[in-house]
Image 1 (cartoon, rainbow over the protein chains, first blue to last red):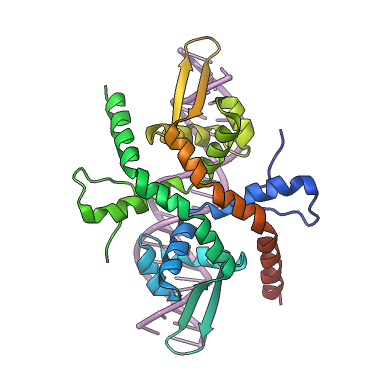
Image 2: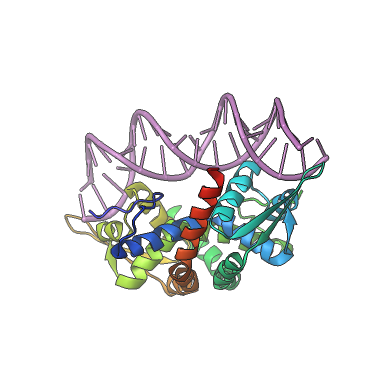
Length: 131
Length: 131
DNA sequence: CCGGATCCGGTAGGATACTG
DNA sequence: CAGTATCCTACCGGATCCGG
């Protein structure tokens, strides 16, 4: 079976591996935390860490840090540290991050337009199973 | 702080909770496994379990089963069991599932068009950190 | 005081073996 | 073939600590 390395990126990239590469990056980008951060930063522009934490909601500070680091590494956000006391760190989207946010736009719209059908489907499924 | 219940859906849904509901469903839909299954079924139409497993790749049968159950519950796929030996189960997208697949289209295109920039950004980030 | 690193307990998720 | 059951690891959340 053709194995796809989920997190490693080979040093030399063969042309035929591009599909796998795309596949892997999709896997990292299709994360709810990243979507939430994209959403919050798209809506509010520049945000501080704590503010972002409140806006996203239900995210541990540990995972928010980790998510933001990954997004910074991938070139989706910039992280600007102001050397003051108490610390002040500003996060904002890069053009690349903004474009990804835009790409997710249809997904948000799909949920807004279809959540009713999803809820209804779940009710039916659960009712059927409960018999 | 305003808490968002990640998995519970209240029996009576207040209008002001709709945002949270949309938020929750995004969280469940923004899963790489779901994206992979949507992609595979969009491309190949009806597929059996094992075939789907091969097409998605790097997914445990446990998680594939779980993902497919969730998608069935949410009304994204249909599951047709042929009562024969050996078992034969066909999965295919519902219209709702197809529409979600379409909503993710821009995200796939984003990755195809931007993965080079992401890789480059990672290289720079790692080089900077290594100093 | 804010941003985040660290340690620890619980749980999601992978590998394997088994069954209808 | 398409799952379930079992075990075990790795990751996540929460509490705590800390440097600036």
